[in-house]
Structures are given as structure tokens and as C-alpha cells.
Length: 388
Image (cartoon, rainbow, N blue to C red):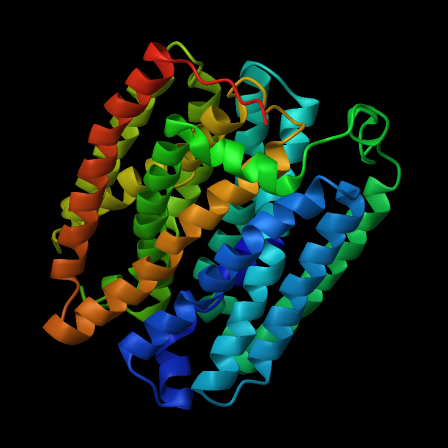
């Protein structure tokens, strides 16, 4: 939740931040995509870290770094200071993103693993809902400025880090026997190269890049896009929260249903929903717009969860190398996380609206849908086995 709250905190504030910092949509797009850039750099090292130290220490550290990012945003006075503050988030974020799937892979198996992954995904979703719905209706009027709001979020993240550290102290979260007393593990670079050599893994990484391009573009620009339909700031915030609310329901049901036997059919349908969602956002008609938001919600968290499940369930990866595998996944994915917000902001400045950008997102979703068949074929024709 601390992750989701901080990651989406700037989206409802674009109008105020652009005015205070005197920047364009393109510059704001680069700020919105800045943490994804550092996320790319630190995702794999975070995976290495998670495979070496206890989750209690690692996740506490990651959450405190997220708090530092929000604190630095509160004191930003220009473009450079703001983009640097946002980039700090990309140092702590991957520890959370890779650490939670690693714990779930260790603790759960079978259908319960999908459900557990879905429950975990509700955390950032709830944080995003709070940010999108309460920023203009409750938080800004109460706190007085967006800077004070950033300070409040920093405080919440710090308390969250402390809460996790306390409850994790009573759980069996230290490194497992296989990691501490088992056979000597191969070098991390050897593990990394062995993962990259698998064709199915390479295709998964490309698909994740496309999915994050779509998700991060819409996550960050949706309130502004809805404002262009004539909505007020408060109305746009509530409407922008619809996909996130639906995403919570989707993340609790769809990953559990996505057993290996029907996983790729569900993945293909989700890709089609993503394409249709981006296309329907082109229309200002309420029924079509609402349908687009609902479809985007169904896709938002479920599709990423299924891809991660496919990755960590490749024989030989499991919980032993789930940290490195998840780090590699998010390294590739967050390349799309950078280009999504930046690209949509740039295309807006070039054309004066979001139509071209939404068409590009629709095309990307169509490509991912076709890649689903290729991935299914790779896994069936020559099932991979990871052995560094």
C-alpha cells in the first residue's frame, strides 16, 4: 500500500506541480517516468540482495527508501530537484516488487499461490485508490498544499516500515536452509545469464515491457485524460480510481483461476481486454468510457501477476532463484514504465490531445496478445528447465 500510494501520488497533482515548477506535459511525463528509470538499474541488484539477506531487513529498507523519496518531493522547487526526488523511489521500489513474489513463492504452491499473489496485489491498488479519490476531496483541503501531502505520505511509509519490521520479527523470514547450509550456489552473474538464455524468459520480458508501457502510461495520465472530457479535478480522481477498484477484484479471482491448463487462454483474453480498453478511452461517451475503465481494471494487476507466475514456476527457479528472476522481470518491465508516461506526455504536446497515444497503446496490446500464442508454443514444444 505504501508503494502504491507513493507511486500514484503525483498523478492527481499534475496541474499544481506543472504550475509551481513551470514545466510542460513532456517534462512532467519524464518526472512521472523517472522512478521507473532507476527501477531498471536497481531491480536486478535488489534481486541479488533478496537472495542474500532476510526479507525482514530487505523490505524494511525498501519501504524506508520510498519514504525518503516522498520526503524529497516535498522540498522540490524545480524540475531537477523533483525528478531526482522521484528517482529515489526507484531504488526502494524493486525491493518491494521482487521481495513480495519471492516470499509468496516460498510460502505457497498450486492455486493458493495465485490467490496469495492476487492478495498481495491489492496492497498497491488500495494505495492508488486512496491517492486518486482522496487527494482533492480530503487530503489537499486538510493539509493545505501538495508539499504537505508529500510529507504526510513520507510519514505513512515510515510507519509502515516499522510495522513490517515488528511483525516480521515473529515470523520465519530468515534465509532458508537451502540458501545458508545447502550446496554452494552459483554466482549471480551465472544465474542471470542462464535465465536470459531461455527463449521463454526472453519473450516474457518483452511482454512485460509492453504491459508496463500501457499500465504506467494510463496510471499516470488517466486523471488528466478524464479532465479533457469536462470532468472536474475531484470527478476525474474518482473516475480514475475505477480501474484500480476493479483491479482489486480481478487480482483476487483471475490469478487463482489461471491454472497452467487454462493460463494462456486467460492471458490472451486479458490482452484483448487491454487493447479494447485503450481504444474505448478515445470516446467521451459515458457508456463507452465507463466500459474502457472497467476493462482496464480487469487487466491492470491480473495480467502482470500471471506473467510473474509463469516465470517463477519454470522448473528450477522456484523460491531459490525467485528474487533474481523477479528482479530481471521488473528490470525489463520498467523500461516500458519509463516510456509509457514519457511517450504519452510527448505525444500530447505534439498533437494537443491523447488520441494518438491511446492508439499506440491499443497497438501494443494487440502485439502482446499475439505473443501469447508464441509463449504457449515455446513452453509446450520445449519445456524449459532452469539449471545455472
